[in-house]
Image 1 (cartoon, rainbow, N blue to C red):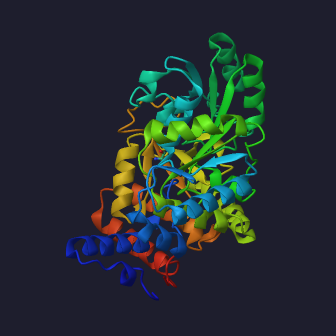
Image 2: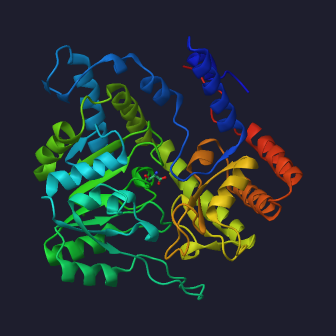
Length: 429
Ligand code: DSN
């Protein structure tokens, strides 16, 4: 297996060391298909685990509320410079602790309480912070939700794609101050240009939530929303393959308000160790090899989608353009819920997450859908052939879900596959 990261992470706390070992085992002997996860590089892990965690740095480079910041000022400036260069943006804020914080900071910066936001509804593919009643966002701002076109049985036009007529009608009717493009469970490319046109027609600002596709944009596999959007938010740990966290890029005219909304508006001391790790990830994403990686993510997801369809799963929107495939489980087995599928696949060593599908008759806790993604195992080196094998393993496990021995056999086959693709096989710190 090569040297293990565990050598570098042995702590003087036996319980935590044992739990790190347990998750090392889980991450390297089971297949990681959660579309929002990835394997960060050893350099990203090293920076995130560094001594910069010791430093308080409320404020921004050159304007801190604590002394002794000359090093972290350089770290944060480097991260901001690398990020603006990566996306061709005017301004970057690298402090958001997660994507949700980044989104709320944008609303706080650009809007007054009670203003109207037009965004994608959760069950149609949107994120909780796009106005779900379960999110604090719905208490401070008035959300109007757009969705996707109806499902169709025509394979040439399967539907379930963003309904721009609906977006425009709602924008004209409700005159939102902000339109949010971007999704969390949507497998098609999202083009920012038509959103910009609609925003201009009604005098709205445009935010693009690129949480899932930031890496694909950085690698050039998806078009950049930066020329069209006032603000772009994203997480750094999904397809971008950095540490867990968020970031915001924006036009210069919004920079001051965005910075004030992140700190002191929402957060306290920035995580400078994580910001250092973000800087490492932005450098990695600017390399030509990262474009090769993102092209492979998409090629793998497409092969995975085709193989899953041939196993009898219905693909929401008929396929994928990105790293993600959203499965409607009802055609595969009318009794099978997303919750049960996720639990069965966990027992078989295949890590996924249940997800609502458009107009899902089941609750978000149960769901009729399952979301899978290719970003993590592409990092580990898997290619189209391995994703085809995983589709067959998923189908086997779900068809034999009441047969514990069959699930053990699938788990063994999964472990044999993973043994050939250990992402940290040559880990050195
Ligand atoms: N939890 C993220 C995802 O899995 O897509 C979104 O917040």
